[in-house]
Image 1 (tube, rainbow, N blue to C red):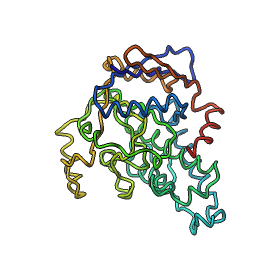
Image 2: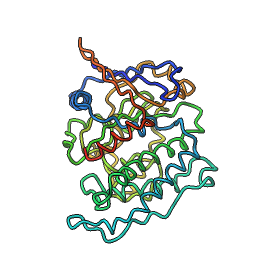
Image 3: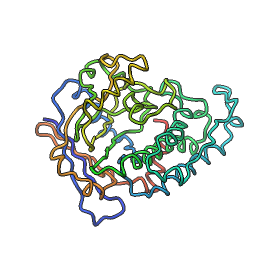
Length: 335
């Protein structure tokens, strides 16, 4: 059996005892294919994205999260893309990004409509994974980093707002690596049988390395702002994964998702569309991971993999607040 262990820590309080989460992978040819890619990222020292490791909780307050997003948008808007146009990547208009978040937007908690407007500036600025926008090409490293960071900042606030009123733990741990999705290999059809709309607390899910959202994410977030080109199934194989630490999702609740698909002329039973999530493993003792217990953590500083008699560990000692991490992040923007 292959296992992955994530060691969680509190990056700002070393007195908090670290916590190991052990994940058992299922025995399936597609999972073995994903595992090879995951090991490759570990062994080659890929850059672990710590900007949105924990989706659903944050060590930052809502007002600070909001201010971070607005500051990022201000920096992007202040940059003159037209003045920096290039012959190979011509830019004739600066992006239109007028909206900002206010405290009033957050008064009633989760605000899908406004958050989706803000969030969708990112795919507009970046372009789909196979058609990068000219804005991104002519941006400086600092502005390019702002565009990429915007996605993470909005995800963080959006999920915090969604989950703050939940009685139970509602958290996702996202392990993702800085990679250009266009350079990744196509996701083999052997993965299709792993996809399911019904998922359970503790499931390990295949990550989404592209720009935009999957169909089920767009439905759950009531996103009517996102262009169709940014709503797609997983098409690329990455070493990313999403650890679902939230209530299970099942029918009849998912009946509404099927109706949503039909309204968009999509066959809910078409396996080739990879609707839902690909389940690749399960967390051990997931019932011990309560909302109170998990609220102590915001970082992953060690990843251990185990198969047969081989055990290897990989350190990620930096946090997203470290100067060194921010510098390394910029270096990896073009990976």
